[in-house]
Image (cartoon, rainbow, N blue to C red):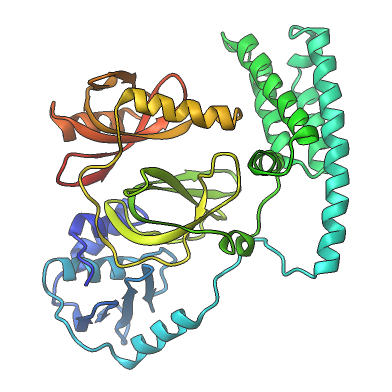
Length: 425
């Protein structure tokens, strides 16, 4: 049976309000017909209606089911049931028929497609692919010439400091079906229009990387680099194609989950670390505003599984279609110190010069609010002060394993381990 602590269960919650509500329900009085086995946990929770809510958890996902009307996943009833079990108030037993049917339906369900991924007619797909290739090639050539003209005219030229210039050419890239290039153009347009103190350096560097992307699209041979270039321009490998490729088998520690609320999209980043291969992995999930995101194993746990990585020069994003049983993550992870972290980043940037940051894991470092220090050097810290103070508090002056994103100047800490537990920051 998966052994989840109360802290691990609360880490599944979509917000603080759900945790508070679940704690109030995590007592035997509202519950009947509770039970658990190696795969599932179930129970009936008395609510405001005449019928109790039917609650179940599939630990193989994990996945959750509740008959309440809440749109939150997991809802307060699911969290309360898991908290109740964490306190030892749920006995082992045989699942009722409703739970058996639900688990059976989940086991027979085909793997879901990526949002927006079409069902393909091979001939039509080949025709569309050829048409897109031609559109992108034309757009990339236009972009290459535009960048050369812009640099030739000087970074101080008035037209380069007008947002409409950048936004207009970004729209050209959208029409050419290269949305990745459009996104980079709009980002550079923001720098040019705002004129921060370091705008010349940022603008020239960004335009240089865009020009390099155009050159790589035209000249890179088939292989990982070309896969990376196509991804940066806006191609997305199909889920089925990725899953048909090789898998990386490992015991994966779940280090952190970051949810970004954008105007038209919610993005969930779940960071994993392979404890055998000593490598990072990123699970990306998307949902419209207000819609639930895919439920991933909570931070602080680990599982054995084979991940399928998207192709590229620096494979990082992966697909997880099935996990093994969840266990507590070890309190230590990572390898080497500062020199190893910098060497790993240098190797990644050498393979993929368009990287803005790279995940690194220090095996042992002492943290203060401004830096983490190992035997072979120190890395300055950046980002959330709350995360940095939590890092300091967890360490208390003792060495920690530290995971974060290094951007060439500072490290944004996301997780740490003190030897006994792993904590998302």
